[in-house]
Length: 175
Image (cartoon, rainbow, N blue to C red):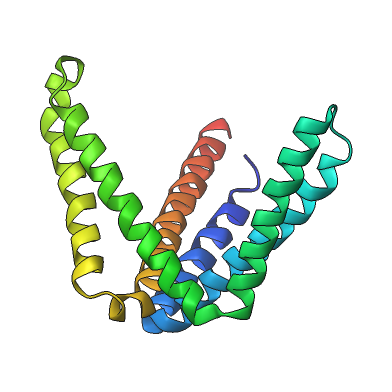
C-alpha cells in the first residue's frame, strides 16, 4: 500500500496515452493493428514450438497447424497493415453485433428479469456500435480501433488513479 504513487503515475500515463490516441486515431489504429500482428506472430511461434513437446501425434499436428495459422496471420497483418486494419475492424463489428444479439436474447430469460433493462441497454449499445461501423465501412476502419484504444486507455487510467487514491487513503488511516 506504500507504493500508491506508482499506481497514480501509471494512471496518469494511461490517460495521457488515451488523449494522444484520440488526437490521432489513425496512428493509434495502425499501432493497435501492428501490436496485434506481433502478438499473433509471437503466439504462433510459441504454439508451434510447444507442439514438439506435446504427447501424441494428433495433438502435435493440431498445435503445429494452429501455430502456423497464427504465424501466418501475424505475418499478414505486419506485411499489409492497411488491409489488416480493415479486417480487424470488420471482425470487431461482427463480434459487437453477435455479442449484442446474444445479450438481447439473454435479457429476456427469467433469471435476468431484475436486470433486464441493463442487459437490453448493453445489447443496444453493442448493436448500435456495430451498425455505426458497418454503415461507414471501410472509412470507419481508419479510426475505430484507435478510438476504442483511446477510450480503453482513459478508462484504465481513471481506474488506476482511483486505486492509487484508495491505497493512499488506507495508508493515511493506518497511520
